[in-house]
Image (cartoon, rainbow, N blue to C red; front, side, top):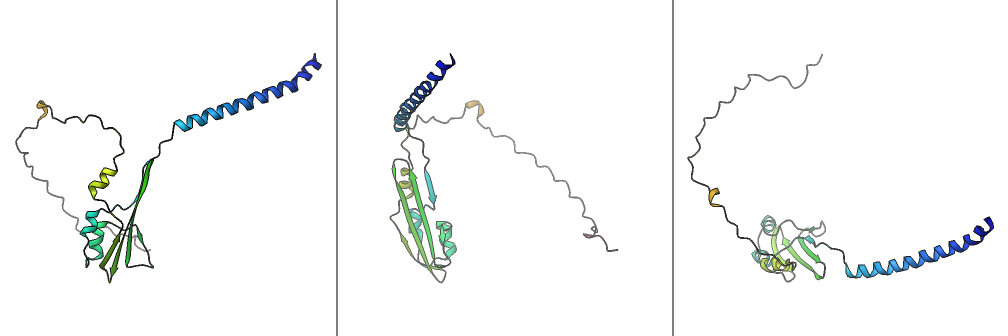
Amino acid sequence: MFELIARRTPWTVVLATCAAVSACSSVDSASNRLVSVVTPYKIDVVQGNFVSREQAQALKPGMSRNQVKNILGTPLLTSIFHADRWDYVFTFKRQGVAPQARRVSVFFKQDVLDRVEADELPTEAEFVASLDSGRPVGKIPVLEMAPDTTPTASAPPIAVAPKPAPALPASYPPLETPAR
């Protein structure tokens, strides 16, 4: 009996190995088909400072650095080697759409705005429209307040006189302990 089991064991191992290998290839091909149908969700990646056409048009030669910063915000890139130049870089990547990249460079002479170099910039409305992901928007409900919850004019609150503050001490304890 032992001799029969010993003769069949190598064939059993070989058959089990062949079955496992063929099963792996069929699972692998099925998983490849599934991956080609189902794609993972990729988030939108927004990096940098968005500068609109309106903001760029608001810049005028002769403005101070602080005025430029109030309009455009803090620059993304400043360099100690180019102290008179600020760079505003913006990138936007979305799955299935060509990435957007824009650059605005602001040049100063003696801390006063000299010139602006920029790519073609969209207006704020154009940029907001480009953010629309194309998802269908459902019916937007009308917001109304129920008639029984409408605020009514009530009597003004009664003013209460504040309590007087306690008197301050005449002297304070020492901050350090006396030396011995």
